[in-house]
Length: 150
Image (tube, rainbow, N blue to C red; front, side, top):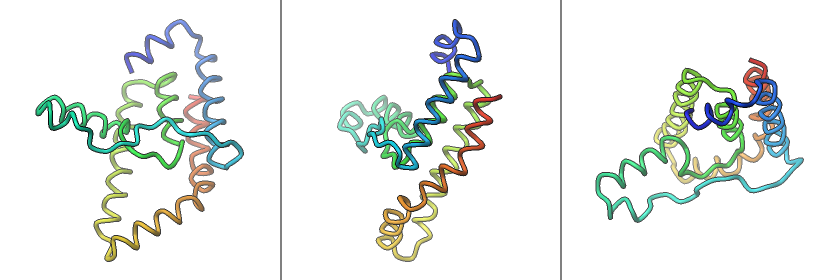
């Protein structure tokens, strides 16, 4: 939020809205497979520094996992949220987005914990997600419009 506040300070609100709208459009078109490009992600799990720097390594790793900066990302929709928070968000918006991110991660983990057959649940997730991306993009569209227009 601090970096975003500094970056957007010299820009008029309409410029931030246009940039966010363009980015949202590109990522939504990627979800609909009109465009294809790799997502920015740090797709590594537990790094070596966690064991080498006992306290601060764990703190850094926890912060990276909690913010989604160290995780696999099968979709670009969180990138839209990050860009809109960067260019348009307030502290309360960031807190609500963080809570939503935490709930989403918790629901996914609870789904796997409650599954009777973990391997089957994992396989179902791998095969079902690509077929459902258009649905997620469609459901995200009103949220993206609200974030840009508000």
